[in-house]
Length: 483
Image 1 (tube, rainbow, N blue to C red):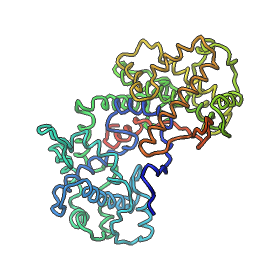
Image 2 (cartoon, one colour):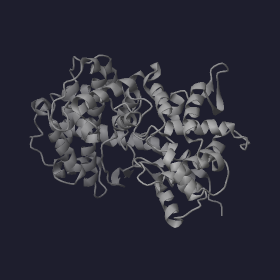
Image 3 (spheres, rainbow, N blue to C red):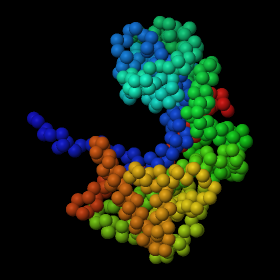
Image 4 (cartoon, one colour):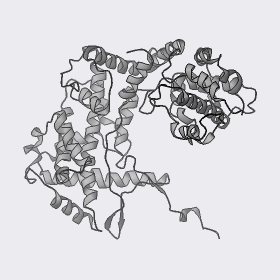
């Protein structure tokens, strides 16, 4: 039976990603100050491996058409047997190895081999290297554009430096049985062949010295990636001077925002690093601003138990909240007390994420928002970094500049009025704008719906900190013998 026009099909998958549309600002700044290496590219290995696969794909006469579809098939075969060889090899480095789940099951079901290629090991395009392709393009190992004709290539072409990288990688693996007999056919691969292969190919790039040298140049020694090189110098400084040998998100926030080591030692900053230091401070400040808003948003949705008008919803939120302030005081009466150390800020946020003392979420959210205002509003030591305060103005989200202007506008108004503004404009309205945009992309991002003027909750909200690229950059630097 016909289902009617497509417009009648309103079934959409629910997405929780960036429900307020405010996380993208920190992501955009991070991408600008730390290009190529991002939160999903933690191992250097995949860039030369992918470049070599491009190179080998182009040389293979068994491929009828040079297309993304054909390349995806070829790439995934190489990736699958790399993962399989790594898992079969005793004591192998498997940190951030992608595609393990199905491959481990294949080994469990067939412990002695031989192993056929299993295309179901990874569903998305380019397998474990899906996020590394952009870096291959950024470093000009492959190109998808011809400047002479001003046209895009149907399929990327490998460059001279890409060929150099590919040959360096191939020289290490070319004497293995897998390379010589199995990489280009549909044959099942014996276990002993994969064990030999796994002793040579490895995610830590041990033995791939030339590949590492070429990748160090591509990442850090060209004008294109000057900012990435600045980030690497910052990490090296922390490693050499303060013995910071690993990073997680908590470490990054205390180091880059409070300029204190995780052990509590003050970080004396090198004057040569002042710009990149300020830029990462702004990124973390932006994340705290986001967390402050999310604290309030989480509590608001928790109070939306039954259909109510927006006025009643806000009244119930305030009634369920606990304040140490008299919220009829002016914002100016409390603004300068909103300065907190790392431990205090983090405890306010962790209380919410763990479901403790949630009645204080509104006050804590406002405290964190005002603390970010206090940190950045009148900074005289910032230069061009101040441009990041306007990020978000042109993308239907909330900029730091808007934060500064709004706090100034509400300085002589009551705390209650400021809270109501935040709930109305920066949360309910901002969420609507964001979720409506997602709906146009055939995704359902609405946490509430409105029927006859009544607000009805669809989902509760869970909050967490965004990733920080410096974590992955430190691992890449370790892989490349830079630390």
